[in-house]
Amino acid sequence: MKDRHGNPVPPAKQFDIPPVWLLGTLILQSLIAWIMPLVRFDIPGGILFVVAGIALVLWSASHFRKAQTPIHPRRKPTALITDGPFGFSRNPIYLGISLVALGWGLQLGALSALILVPLFMLLLQRRFIEGEELHVGKAMGAEWDDYARRVRRWL
Image (tube, rainbow, N blue to C red; front, side, top):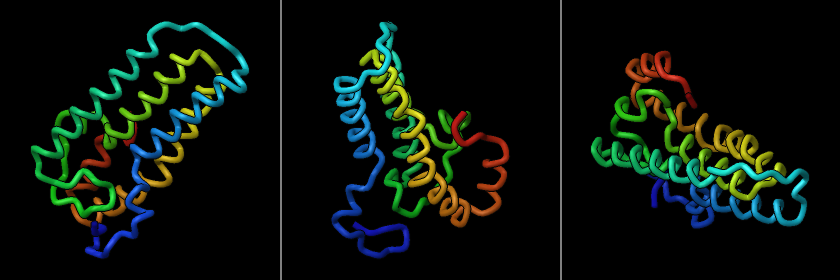
């Protein structure tokens, strides 16, 4: 695999992708809810956030396929997607996986599991989003600048 500059990506870095971080977050949420629940609650509907998050990810991914641009965060973009879910969020896939983490935390019914959601979102923003937006901005120029002024990062 090659990065957006055409350089080979080390094997360990190939697994440094948002779905792996989501899986780790879900596992950590489960462990924390089991070991240290802090406050227990029973709010039905957590699974609805999980399903909505997955649907948003799939809807967003379909726009990458339609635009024929790489979905992998370390590959160079070939098109700027501004329609569909990208019309209301510059990062609908990250929003979708954050909804999955939120829904999972609600489903677990433990405040300690929910505390991880904003931390997960901060991790996504610092580890992926900020760099991606910088690279997309360089690749797309004024078109990106206009889009970034019109559409918020998350919602």
